[in-house]
Image 1: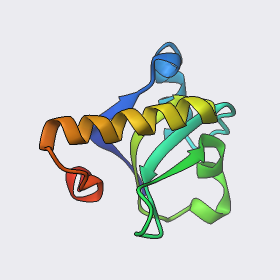
Image 2 (image 1 turned 90 degrees about the vertical axis):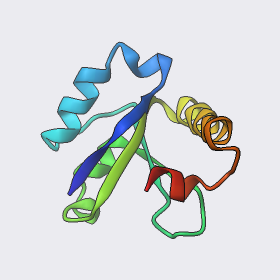
Image 3 (image 1 turned 45 degrees about the vertical axis):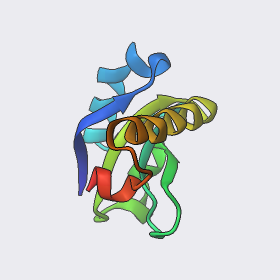
Length: 102
């Protein structure tokens, strides 16, 4: 099941397409160009940066995924992920990313 974090992040580049991206993800339509940021599935890394279209693939159906952010393209997703880490540190004084978003 796909869930959205209460205060999910949206990059500046994705802001104009935000509603379209969200709608496409919720309706399991292919969404090319957009990326989603989630906590890393392997439990070791910080985030997974996934092309949004992958959420429509069989490998992700039925998985419990919480979207923490959306971006437009991979480089934008990398920048947003860095901003999220910096934001967590500025708000909490620590780099406990997984705990912050849980």
